[in-house]
Length: 184
Image 1: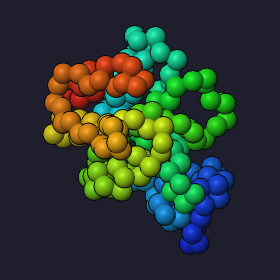
Image 2: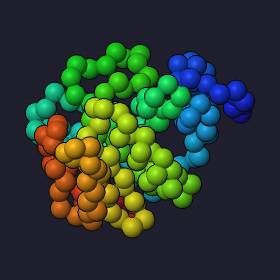
Image 3: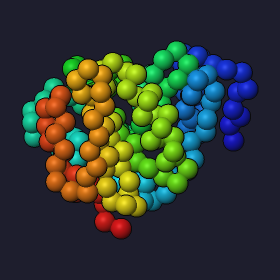
């Protein structure tokens, strides 16, 4: 069992500490939070989204990469999140990297313990990352996807979909929503 530190931490301190822990954590405003164990529904939805993103990137022939959960996204000096999937473009990251410096797409799958955080603090936080264009929230219970997209003049456009496709431009591919929503 790992012990969470009591002192506030920077992202650098947190990443150095977290790398040696048996459990997974996130950092919000300098405070460490343990990540709850995931349910099968969550794991299946996460895997479906990861496959759909990877397939969309390949089909479009883009120089982008999908990373599954486990890679950190730095929000600022005191906050970092670990999305369920992310997409970045450009050269492959170093194999020992633990953070993705310029994600274009991040995905969170809702769970009973994270719903309010994913739709509140993380929504605001992720869009503080200048490279981020799309934040996808998958609700495996209601079988829908919420697509937040960075629009013109800093506006965030939102679409809720239970089927069809979502345009993820940039980087330039369409995501089949149904492929991301696993059967109950």
